[in-house]
Amino acid sequence: MKTTTRITNRIEADPDHFTLPVDWNTDAIVGRRERFYAASQRAFVPYKTPLIFQRGQDQYLWDEQGNQYLDCLSQNLCVSIGYNNPAVTRAVQAQAAQIQHCTTMFFHPVPAHLAEELAAKFPEGEEWVVHFTNSGAEAIDFALLLARSHTRTGDVLSLTNSYHGPTLGAQSVTGISNFRHPVPLLGGIQFVPNPDQYRGIHGEGVEPYLDDIDRAIHYGTSGRIAGMFFEPVQGYGGIVPAPDGYLEGAFERVRAAGGLCIVDEVQSGFGRTGEGYWAYEHDGVVPDIVVLAKGIGNGYPLGAVVAKRDIAEAMADKFYFNTYGANPVSCSAGRAVLRVIDECGLIDNARTVGAAMLQVLKDMERKYDLVGNVRGRGLMMAAELVKDSATKEPAPDEMHQLFQLTRKHGLVASKSGAYRNVLRICPPLCIQMEDVAFFEQAIDASFADLYAGVTA
Image: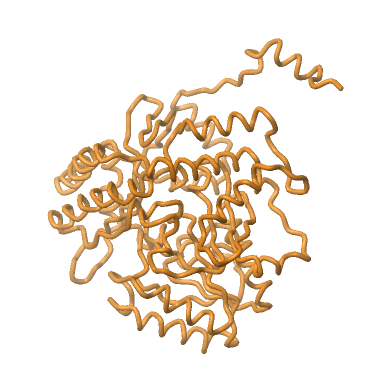
């Protein structure tokens, strides 16, 4: 049997003809986007002047003009182990040269290997299984469906200030108006106040927030629930870690009502908090379902739902799939990510470098009265800007100016939070201690410019 066709032979005979041109002219890039992108894809532009990236290496980025930046956002936490990581590149190239896609109705070893290797990262004593998706939002949708299917119950709890994704199901459990569209979303969702120790409705402490769970179950549901969604560290909500004891107490209450504990590690997973592979480990709890994405593939599209086997069996009699969810190229990237995290000590690196960067932000808190609160774990940290430290009135305008200035001084960061007044710092796990001095200089210069009225 022939292994090539006339089409393959033609391409190999004249490969230059099939090399696709790319126009790197700045005006042309902006113009094509404005002309051919739908409004829904044009809307998410944070900078006044578009930032166009041409290449990246490790924790650094270069725009089309050759300007270099220290990446403190990781492409919204997707590039977990750094740009152009050679292990990921080799794994992807090798797999792409064999077969680019194999749908889940057929078998391929690479996704099964990744499922095995992921399951090994979860607590012993349980049999963990994996369902691969294309993205985190799809994984949230599947986790919601799985919880309702297993419990045969519709009511679900979620936290205010949470973000779980833009799809209809993921929006329905998202607790920030900025991310919810003015259309009917899924029913049966009750929101519980998040235990924000800086801005929460009960202030500091845990028990009042746990009491809110009891009240939500008693007054807003049938008394039996399908589950509750948790971010151990709220991501787009402004890097808000759950206080010690909250997850443990919440899990007890959810399970007492027959529900499953669903942990969203899309942003906080894969060693980012420097305390283990998963942020929930900080609290010593064992979830029932865990949602993964973003850093799992170092930028290649991939998500996953990891669940206890007996829970996952609820879907055994119904046909469900995600077309590219177990794509062998993306799964090859995922396998390389796990290997690099383990063998290059990136969890330890996240803890030590993250602590140094967090100290820089705390120094800014002491130096600049606009900084109301600094918080974070590992390489997941934030500074919240307020107009008044006593009233905690958000300062979104000042945040917008500071955000623009950080770009001027060579940083790529993010503004987030329900009031868009939070500077979010989440660099790739490969960032080095040597970068901290530049980070400090750039942040300090950005604040100094803000106070001096300099605009970017």
